[in-house]
Image 1 (tube, rainbow, N blue to C red):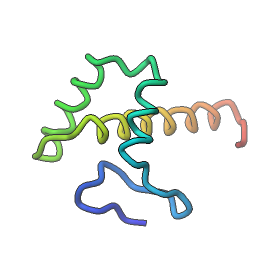
Image 2 (image 1 turned 90 degrees about the vertical axis):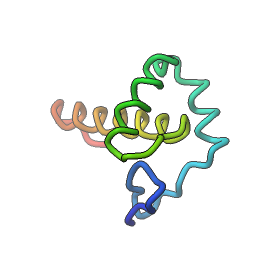
Image 3 (image 1 turned 180 degrees about the vertical axis):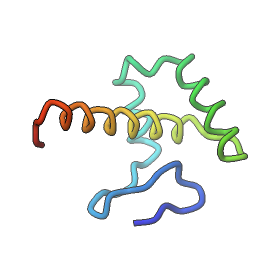
Image 4 (image 1 turned 30 degrees about the vertical axis):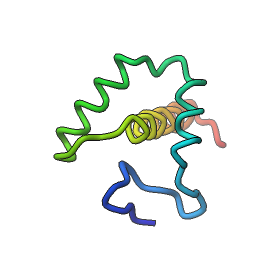
Length: 81
């Protein structure tokens, strides 16, 4: 499913977008997403998008990158999900 112009990423066909409340909850439970890391992510992606990226969008970007990295690691190890 293609992203809309305000979304930082793509959604899987069977995946629904994450709401702001869900992203906020996710952010508070992910200790690896520090305030500094979040600000750096916002700065990098705001420049790439040519607009300000919100905290929610930055968390979504970080979570997507983390999930992608986990898939690559599993593939390298020959594991299946």
